[in-house]
Image (cartoon, rainbow, N blue to C red; front, side):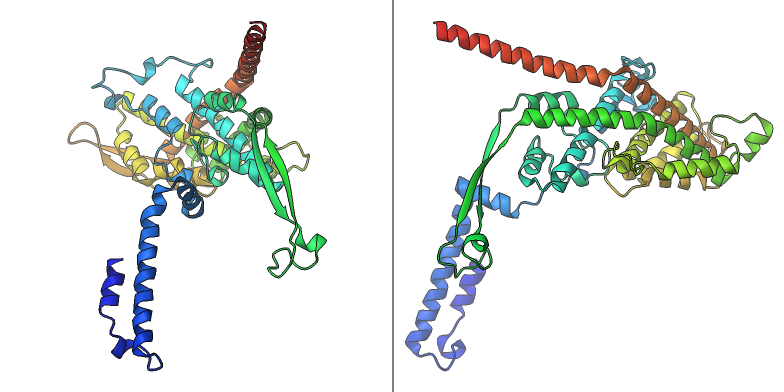
Amino acid sequence: FAATLSTLSAFDPRRDAPSSLSGTGSKMLRVSFSACSLIVACLFCLVPTIPAWNVLFSKTFHLPRQVAAVPTSRPASLLQSKLMPARLLRDARSSPLSLRMGSVPGMTDAEVTLVDDLLCQRAVQNQLYYFQEFRDGFKRQWLECFYEHEGLLNFHGFGGLQVPASDYLSAMMESPPHVHEVRSSWGNRYTGGSKDNPYLQQQRFHTYNETIHPQKICKGIMEIREQVAKEWIEDIEFVKMEDAIFWHDFGVMEEQELQAPKNNLGADDEGAHMEERQTLFGVGISGNHQSTPLRLRTYDVLKKASSWVAVQKTLLKFSDQADDAEDWFRSLWEGGWREVLEESGPTGAADDFFRSLAAMPSRAAEGKVEGTLRMITPPDIARQVLEERQSVLQGWKEWLLTGEYLDRHTEIQRALLLRSLSDEVSGDRENQA
């Protein structure tokens, strides 16, 4: 506004005005410019103070918050604090191994929370995809705004759910119905011409009410959760196939296979690998109409999350064993790969991490004892992380087979039923009184 006033003060009607304008016309032009600038300045000062205009401006100019912009999400930060290396926890006089274990041996409560939240996140993303495909924009917008999950559909990673899965589903199950009035024009149907033709004398409108029932959406998400859980139980076995193909392609275990019997990461023969590759290519596209539409992307997120947990546990083992490879691997992890796996990004991040680690040559690094050198073998570290990932995925599979997530669904529906019965009894007592 100050820049506009300074420009107007420097305006000379005799010098800057067109020759066709008289002195009176130039003066009127200058006064008009000043009045318009004053009105615009007042509007920009007053609009933020008006609630209705504030909502309009936020709807018009506010970009949806990208979930990937969050540095460390709630589940990721929770699990990170539970799996922090022991040497960083010595000052707090606590050990991550003393954490209370979950229902599956080897899984902490924090890890169970991460898996349960990821299961719910992928179910919500599939539900958003259904709404998008069926052009149900109102329900999609409502679901995205529920607990501020704008942009969740395009988020490719873990930790995208802003609240624990149980709290998310319970709150949605207890939410009241939402009514929205839809007003659409039908000019081309009744009066001819295009729908937005401004020259139509009478443009007709059709108004109807659309009601959202959060309980129905919540039950749909629960059903998708159950379907995704069944897919994970199958897809975890595909990850084992991929690990066998990975070692076969890179040939990093030839010496181990010559000196020792084949372990669980070894390969059988080329024919078996060709069959496994064909099986992997069919993940999510088998055509039996039983898979969720985002199964292939969910499979990649599953590898991404399990690889992240495996790295954290491998670093914890290195710290407890005083392994000389800990400092080198930690610097590599913190130098960029951790951010790649934690944030949203393209598919194949976990595969790129292991491929890059296994392709690194051996190198000498300074040991923990001063004046000593230790030979670091990155392919061996990749093997240890992959073995840890298989252990992690096996624990996740066992947790899914326990059906604990189904028990949580039952608890949420039971709580809703008890609350409804309590409200009904309270209403009957008030009527009798």
